[in-house]
Image 1: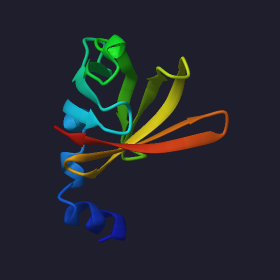
Image 2: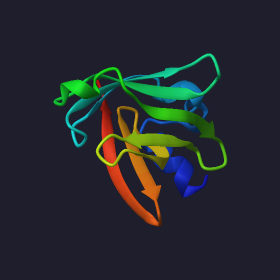
Image 3: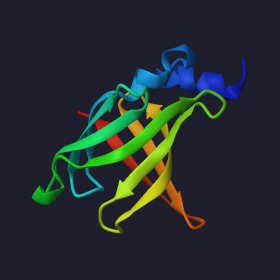
Length: 120
């Protein structure tokens, strides 16, 4: 069995369990103004994330995760995150590191930043 598969199983994330809806639910983003984000699948079939609480009250109800979908080749979700501070969309690749921890790598202009959301 490939090392990647063993790692996923050891983390409690069996490959069959990773699918479009594996990231649905409520996430806490302590590195992003302590936001709480509700991740949901919209009628267009894409995944979106809406801020439901944040240290910055003006950000509540804003959609920050946009048009994300599960890419089976990458075993990750790809889409965009809107940076409220920078005022621009950033390409994003998201992977479950554990069932309750989502690794998010945003990149734009050849630069990237990694942060984490934890399931609430």
